[in-house]
Amino acid sequence: MPLPPKVFVIDDEPTVVRLLERLLTGAGFDVEGYPSADAFLVRPHYQGPACLVVDQVMPGCTGLQLAEMLPSDTAQVIFISGQSSVDVAVQAMRSGAVDFLSKPIDLERLVGVVRHALVRSVSAVETASAQRHVAVRWATLTPREREVCLLMARGLLNKQIAAQLGASEKTIKIHRARVYRKLEVTSVTEIARLIDLIQARSPRRSH
Image (cartoon, rainbow, N blue to C red; front, side, top):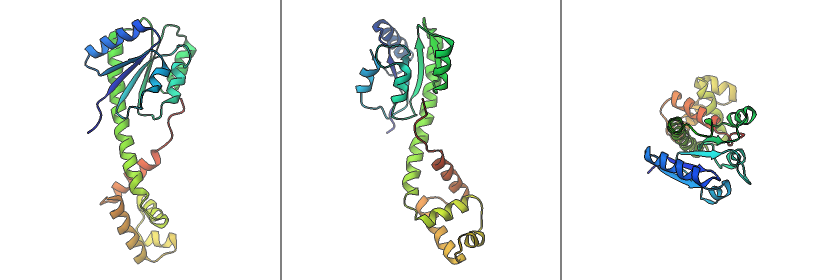
């Protein structure tokens, strides 16, 4: 069963954490508050959709540093700060943040931004899950079957694939059947979509 979306509030000001916890809980979100990035990082990684509302300027690990340490790119980050500047805001947005809000926070805007962030996170989690499933199936293909698969995705016919790989058309037909079976697909269109998912797999965003 998929895990529900969750919001994590991380700020070294206890009053801010309590305020945002009350506000976001009242808006219907499942919320956890933490007094520092280090305290949050001790928590086991949450595998479900997540949004982090993070103070950019904190003692020790800053908000940007915390974002860089997140183990996946499915969690969405919203930075907040009472010491904002144009440079800091630009850096935060370039890091992949959903938004950068200056204190005192417009609470109504925050609720809307959190909703948007969780929608993005749900989509990212679903995509990551699909990519993992595809990767498992892709790993069952032999090197030759992968070559055939990639050429199939380009729309080449058996005769064309055979000529390009220096194999007989009969052999390509056998490889083609195995590709369909192992990837659990029934059309070249599905294969092309799976290839897109595989190629989209990448390490965590650079922030």
